Length: 318
Ligand code: ADP
Image (cartoon, rainbow, N blue to C red; front, side, top):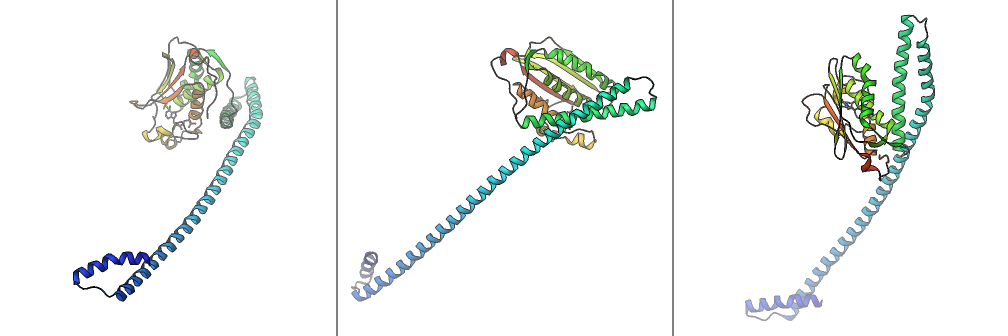
């Protein structure tokens, strides 16, 4: 009421000045009362609206908290499912390795024997080839499962990458020759690196196998090892089918295969480059694809000299 009286006082003054007549006190009191009722009703409406907003906000917040909790539970379940999947893959791969190794061994023994006719030899060679492919796949799956579980160990030693590259090229030569591919290497003497020998052969084998696989008959594959401070640079280039621009970013992702490989139905799992990157990064190095080849593909690996990593503990990063 006091507020209404205060509000109406200047209005009454203005009206009196304009009309040059004093206003009747009862009329002023009625006007002030009406005004105060209106103000009170408006205030009441505002308070109710505020309360409603507060209730809605509380409901929205509790809904958001429930959604967040459900999301966290779902994430936890997904992580658990992922872990179980990796454990399952590791278990199966491990159990498949023993019989497969035995099959490969006995097929080789049989192939070494005299008295096989051409047909029998061809069949056994097919069994041997496919068993090798299966073993390769099982090993890759096992590697990835261990990597994801953080259980992969490296046995680092000082070694000469040039010698490893030379040996890998020699071993890949029959595969290249079978496709009429000119496989060459240009290797300089380089400083020692500190790395796991087996993993370095695996890295080279992955890059070389891809280069041969994705290069049509009569093409070229070249391996180069040079010193590039502060380490050794390995490049594997080919004159093959190349990699479409849009696929380059995801090339090192697990199970990723570029459209150029899928369209041509060239077999593969999409694990080779993922494994290659894990190996290189675990050794403190980098792996990349040359972004501007005129044709074909060029992969470049850079690994630090042993002295640069002597103090650092090597570990696999996932
Ligand atoms: P894959 O088992 O398919 O060879 P990788 O992980 O080794 O799997 O390679 C992933 C994909 O990268 C391949 O499917 C292919 O599309 C592409 N790629 C890798 N190396 C080459 C290469 N030298 N030339 C062309 N494409 C390649």
